[in-house]
Length: 66
Image 1 (cartoon, rainbow, N blue to C red):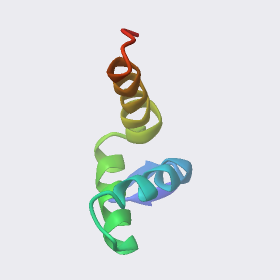
Image 2: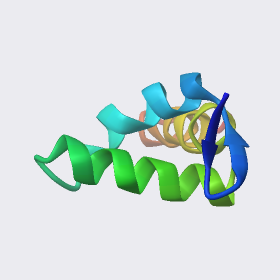
Image 3: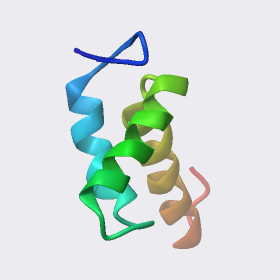
């Protein structure tokens, strides 16, 4: 667990988030800051939020409903 702004956040979640946030920047420092901001607000932002949502959207885009 990592302490960010007084909240405990999973290091695993942060490792998931940093590469994803490179979509918005070429800076590791900025990508890390973005990921940390998301995780302070939603501790499972990547594993239970963004990643499953994107998988579902890709499936829908291919013609599936679920």
